[in-house]
Length: 140
Image (cartoon, rainbow, N blue to C red; front, side):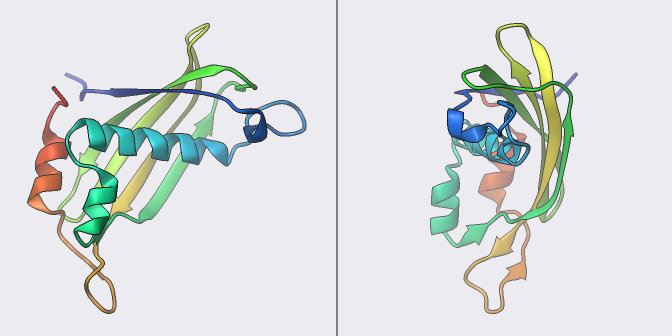
């Protein structure tokens, strides 16, 4: 059974496109970030609150595969799920779909490491149990 997917909708803004009228590749990282923080919030774990409590999840690895261009004013649906949960890391996988014709636009994954913001120097840390529980839930 596939892991539960969180759906996040957005509309491509003009500033996100390049001279050819296509979404610039760097913006997909923003779309994936917006979707994964929305997934966390939907599961009761606000990323802002997570940081205020002394933790952070910096990106350790990012992969993207582009399949079809998205353009200005396209409505996109970003489907995100927890692909892997390690002791001190989490990997989110995502697919970006154009809503109007259900075309897969891009897919990717982001691996994040957990660090303790209160330590000097900042050190790798185990995922807090509250975050782990939220990420293991199905979002219902």
